[in-house]
Image (cartoon, rainbow, N blue to C red; front, side):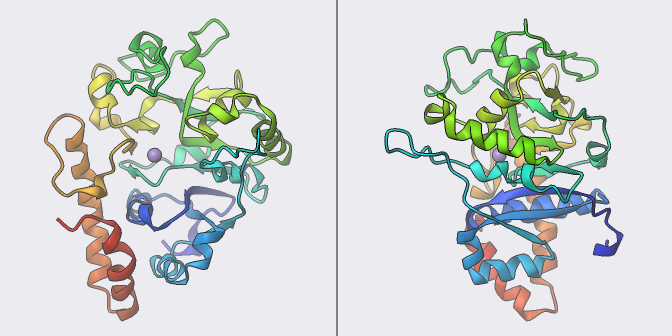
Length: 311
Ligand SMILES: [Mn+2]
């Protein structure tokens, strides 16, 4: 699809802060195109990325527009700055768009998701999927109340995948979202609220998931839960096997270990999902390495090959 055919009032976006996730971003872009989205992916890049000329050339070769975003970080507390992916808040300030959907570059799109651009979203609200708080790997640094009984997905309708509505009486974890997928309406007022909360909220210095934790606080009672299949976290294929249906999954999210780190993924319920990523990557690889454009073939070698496992 050429640029002129896109609906330019709304965009997909994701954040890249270095070359490491570029293979992921190429697969994300490729699968959005492959599923025939009529909206374009524009990738947010930091100032550091902007200075990496060869990397910027690779975005141009891929035909992916970039949006350079300034550093966003909390005011220091006791002389310390809570470092994190705070630039993921930048889309709230992009008021030239009616709607922005924030995605993660470790996702693959398996079915057309353009309905996310038109689904009902009240003013002042965002839409997102729950965070899965089952903690199946029993990671010690995760909060103590991250157990299956408290997970938002445990309460979802198993037949339809629809989430249970969130109320003030819901378990605390039902108020937590995963910021790998967020539908938002850019707004100067909401952007300012987010930045203010980032600079002042007492929990910020101990936040594990940065923008994601902050969004759950600022949009508490003001976010619409989406079915899991708009942000299907790969471990859920095991820990929510009774909810998960492969044929329903629109967005598969490779949280924790990334598929591009090894071509020798396992064949268990979770790691076997890496095949979908590698199949899509093979299509991208063919397009670049068989290109008539020598510059594109060179950029593939210099920018993509070093960050994607070759065996
Ligand atoms: Mn992710």
